[in-house]
Image (cartoon, rainbow over all chains, first blue to last red):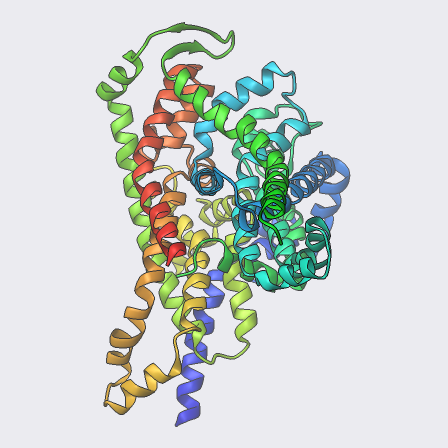
Length: 275
Length: 299
């Protein structure tokens, strides 16, 4: 009796979970089907003929690799810059006393919530005037508008979780402030830094609006707008190819999910949803 | 330690603190504060995008905005989208969190599968859903026809009210994991003693849920709702990519209106006016959220 109830609950729960995950399963399945199999009625649940031709064509016959490289450079640079600045910035915000510190924390939170459509027009004008339009650098600058407040806000709450006594002990032992930061705070903060870096990377990897407005050449286009362009410009839409592109685009995310998922959920707790 | 030395050390620390925050402040001023101020400034001009030639028009953009029907319908769409998708996110999110909180088989795998849509790129989510929604070969229409719910393929994105419903549903699918994770984290901190006490007092599972779980969740739900309301309100990618605001302007929200005005109709001044008006509307929620976070930190 107890077991049947447990079984019923598990079946019910897994039915919902699988329904939520179904679109992603369907993306994977479609990407392995040959084009003609897509039009079969009723649709085949698993690919009847398993093929990697779409992946091959994506890598050899389209601009996908260029977009992928652009996205990788863009997200890595944004993440490194933003996390480095935010780490020392949050250290200052949490552990130092000076005038304007409180209002600065307020501005960080405010910009963390600010819609990008407000900033995009002046940013566009600014970057065009600087002659940076259609470059990866322009996107790094634009992405820092959301990634930096986000990273600061996350790291600030991770930093606040490190006991102040640890630092004081190091100072009493004769360490300088920066020495204590390097030897005591940074090792303690490392999990927080990894969380923040993952979030910053994923946010940059997925960004669409700035890329749409600021970059209009294939040499600097990231994956998001690049893949959407493949959809729009194709004469007849090849869904298998697009699904293969979607899978490839999610590869970094799948890697993060497989190995570093605990850092993602930790970031949630720090990102202002502590109830 | 003599007082003079202490103040010298304190001064040194204050200086070090200022140096460490300097890069942040510089970048903030350059890429956020300056653009924000110029957005407000631009909203007082009439600017033609391709030539970037502008002329001062004062407040007349704002006067035009108040009389413009498109602004009000976009605002209405924005509210429908936000309320619709947010309610679904909360309902599904809390329900899913309660399920995942139970002892189910392969729980961590289930959690990963639920979490994935939230982190996947909006572009990927939209492509997948467009394929599911495809009128001829999409699996959604196939399932609906086979199950006998409909005789004809449904046009999910090209007609109203289908388009709005579809956008709201896809939005709920993509963003409800956020609610799941936040609620789940809170559920795990509710002390078992509370449930134990309620059980001793004779409370059944349903009254335990309403008398113990719900009050414990109230705080976190308020925060989630405010945060998600702000983020859903400013959503651009998903709606733009799914429907482009169409059919005609039926799903056009304020962010889409700003984009269209600036980069399709080439009126950057008017677009800035829309953006500033949108920010003013959001400001109410933003201030509520910020005040709440700060009072929480002080206690």
